[in-house]
Length: 315
Image (tube, rainbow, N blue to C red):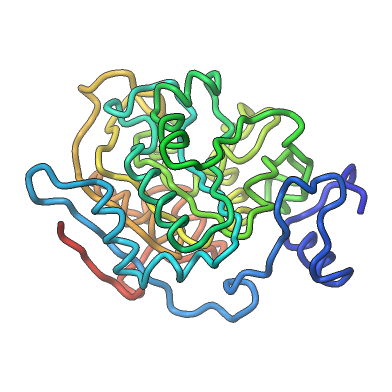
């Protein structure tokens, strides 16, 4: 297989299965084999959405994270023994967690531990950061999470970017961060915050951190760019960190004056529904947020999350 030619994720999986079923990627042996996910192999079933809220004084964010996955049927619903799991947090900014610009480190740590307990072969934390990666890893707490849990913190570099066919309405061929498409299981771990151009950055917009190239140009038609990337990256599940949210001056923030504590996590296998529910934490109607409306129109999910199996967990 010629990796100099742009390829799509699904096309790669199909070709690998046709050629050998278990062939390792030429020139990329350090990354895992693809597998056909249940979401692609079987007709879509009714989705779910679970909201976990910490109400007790001094509640544990790790416990809240564990409980939201337990309410979904357990982490083994998404992670199989031996899987290489890629976690995609938002750690793009060299900001302390209290500023709500990045995914809460306790959420990351809990998900890593759950994946390990499910028997994952490897757990990788991957984000193509905007600020210097080493500074981001240090200040966001991601480096500490990796050190304490044994997860692999993937440093974004040019050798891990590969041109692939995004096949979007706006985006055609684009450099993609390889670990996020060559994992057995991908879990999206965004933080909920304000964005000056797209109104909000939630789960679907988190995939801008999954590509390289002239990312500034993605903002020229940002809602379509978000939806194009969302239809390309298809995680098994999205967990939105709304323990604390940034209400203005996003996406980088810079002051605790912009932060509100919602003590909430939203877990869903429907990326549109997850973003829709999270948008309401900002007092917005989901259908009024451009990329959420567009994503439903293009069939990525529904912003009417009342149609899904719903649960609420209180800790």
